[in-house]
Amino acid sequence: MIGRLFYLAAGAALGGYAVHRVNRARRALSPGGIADRVEGQVTEYRGALRELNEDLALAVREQEEELLRRYAPRRGRRALPGTGQEPPEPS
Image (cartoon, rainbow, N blue to C red; front, side, top):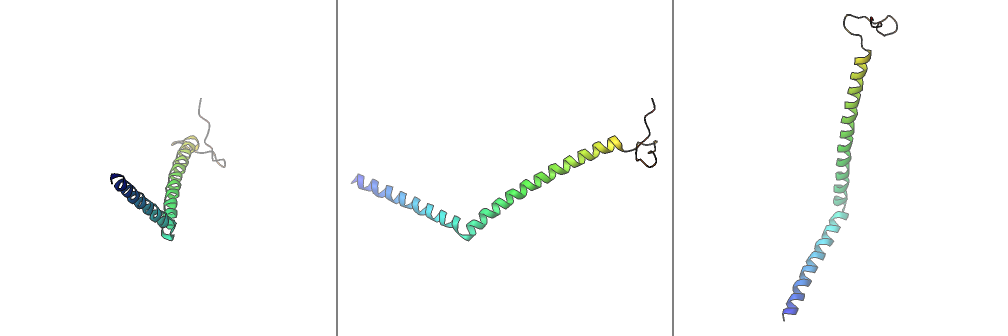
């Protein structure tokens, strides 16, 4: 008697789990499920592209600051005419 109840409960649990898995697979393969997965991937790629854009903008700003520090004329000194370069430092 106990053995039969055990097999009945195990069968019910296994059947419930199988139905759950089938419904989950059916939802995943439906057009809405596929759209949700694609939307998730697009959101993930959008975040990665936003991060890349921020990193590139930071690198460009740093490079621009370095170039301005190196090549921009300082106050009180004028650039050489026609070359865009500043006069040499006095020794």
